[in-house]
Length: 329
Image (cartoon, rainbow, N blue to C red; front, side, top):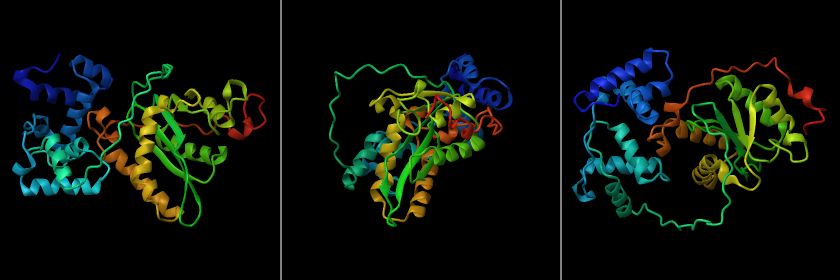
């Protein structure tokens, strides 16, 4: 039953109460009310933050120029931009709306003009699309959190104390939630497995883990491309899912996150290895709990992510027992 104009708030209140109290699939509940999951999460989040008042429609965004915006409003916008210099006008607008829910929200174009007048806009080169690009193969698509996790190494740099910083990143594909951003000094099975064990104990197990064909996730010389790490995943009931060779765009969401990590952390690196890890962890916290994501209807990943119901059982096959297997390397 889609929202009725005469009782929008009542419908939203009923929906949220059922979402919070009934043991029903959130997807099924949204379908019953004729709304998308993104819309359902939006009203649930609004209710949790602001109560019944949060279920009312906010005022429409004014079509104002920067000259008509109050000094206080402009200062708030510039303060948000200062805290998040690489974020665009739309993300800043969503943060403004979240931080000041009962103030009139400037239009995206007004915010862009404020940035232009403040000299905060950089021109970007437009990259032409490759019209001859091969069609992407059909990868497993998540329907809810923990259906698919993706993993990769960001690409390394050296700290000021001359240690290699190679971020291992693990991400839930449905919610975009970053489960780990750990600096390692080598791309080897043992340290990667240690990180996964920590993540499994904290968040539970996914159904699928997607990776590229690099070490230590895959090996083209072994049966089914298995390594000791991916064979260990299988022993836990997890399905390894791999992108095609030399096609990082098949894991596009993960790659975009890596570009943000590079722009906001790697390029400004001027600290020791241990301090780099603290910076990366703080960046992960902001990515999960502060940064709004367009694909999530400008919610944060933490608004969407919930730990897996499949718990990690350390009594299953140990990775050391797979060391001499003839089907993995």
